[in-house]
Amino acid sequence: MSAEQLIQLVYLISAGLFVMSLKWMSDPTTARRGVFAGAGAMLLAVVGTLMQPEVESYHWIALAALVGIVVGVPLSWVPLTAVPQRTALSHAFGGLAAGLVGTAKYYVWLGDGQLTTFRMTAIVAEVLLGFLTCTGSLMAAGKLQEVLPTRPLTYRNQNIINFVLLGIALLAGIALIVRPDLPWLFPLLVGLSLAFGVLLVLPIGGADMPTVISLLNAYAGLAAVAMGFVLENKLLITAGALDGSSGLILSIVMCKAMNRSFTNVLFGAFGQVTATAGAVESRTAKSATAEDAAQLLANADSVVVIPGYGMAVAQAQHRVRDLHDELTKRGVNVKFAIHPVAGRMPGHMNVLLAEAEIPYDSLVEMDDINPDMPQVDVAIVIGANDVVNPAARRDPTSPIYGMPIIDADRAKTVLAIKRSMNPGFAGIENELYFADNTLMLFGDAKAVVGDVVKALSGEKSGH
Amino acid sequence: MLATFIGLDVIRRVSRLLHTPLMSLTNAISAIAIVGAILVTGEGHTALSTVLGAIAVFASTTNIVSGFLITDRMLKMFKKRDRVQ
Image (cartoon, rainbow over all chains, first blue to last red; front, side, top):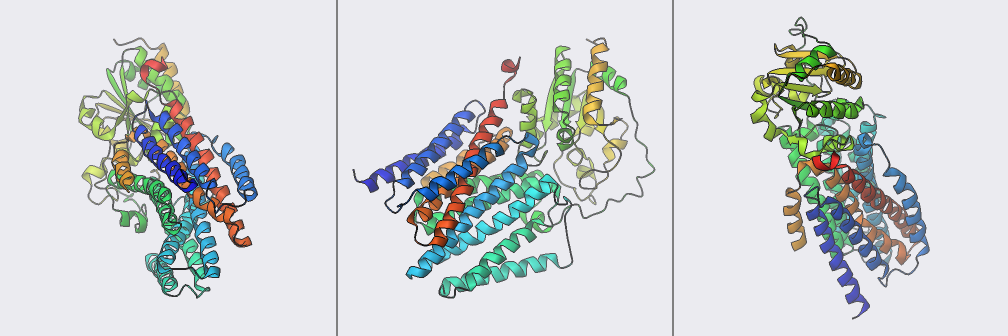
């Protein structure tokens, strides 16, 4: 077997392993095997590439890889609340790598006079996607880490300016494809891609982050696909397409979960509508003490916990787990209802609850729990707001009208744990808190849940 | 190409429970860009291409290492009821 054939065989096995890796991801029992398969596939890909005859010197590669490992290992130790930021940062690195390889190839081929139309088209796509993913993801990471303001930043004619900028970038790209020998166009394309990435994420608010992260995930994958076409490498195309399609599917899932279209997320500046506050100001909510709540829970048969990102911010997961254990011990059926956009990235809440050792078979998806909600004795809302707002079902003037929600209000009693009566992230008033069957527990989620657990362990069982 | 279509079908079947680990994993997989980065760096055509390539190798390695490690870390936490108690 020739060296070339061997490399192709290694690449083929690698591609197959990547697919198997994703297949095993579909079930929690085999998911870890999926990670090993993925890592193995990556190792094969790297070994196969190092065997390529074009690779003549190794010291720069070794040095860069070493630094990468030194930086990468600590990045995997971040707390799980920070996983969205890490993921966004990772997308930025992925975009950067693609953009830089495209740039390097452009200048190498420009010097050799080997810029065919096909190569140039692929390079333009790679550079555009790579660099816009890079800055866009950095912006997203900044917003998630709250070094940048999380609210949407808007200004007059924003969409027009963005479109014009993208238009100029595309024109520069097309001009480069026709006349690759005009070298001043290339830095212009790079600059515009970088700028467009920033402007794209600027108007997007925190509530839309799950969708935006998914979308940037898709772009990073597509940039890798474009790189595959530049280098005519089938493994790159396959693995990039897996990443791109995964990002795309997640984006669609997220959009559906919020009843919004792609264009709406990208150009809508969610949360702009200031709630029709005046009318509701005067209404009062009923508040309760931890003891009231404990008594209520002790006499319940079924309890559904609806967690939101607020629970994670207050680091209340472990208290919630204590509550789960205490109630389960008493024979109460406890389930967790997870809204698809709860948290800051797709599936974030599941990971946070898993960290608190809550068994994953207690986690129920929105569509599966809603039909059972009217039979539920107590629904506990912890740090969630918009995803339980009945206005999404009832009030056509509400900015979140039409968004699928968890029907907490249909439970016999609702306990809502909240810091204060301030409207949540999106600034929308929630009538759930004023409903007759709702009791408010004011305070820090961690402290409140802790108090309820304490009161509960002193309470006699109602069973 | 065939693999891509199989992949699409596979991803659609991943439960919502595992969407965050899925994204971390595909994120690590997209660091396949390291293949291109190694080629550009290793060819050593010009000083510029070597430097750009080396930065790309660095960025991709970071993604590979942190992506696979954190995915595994998260997955270790998913436990069934009987294994928790």
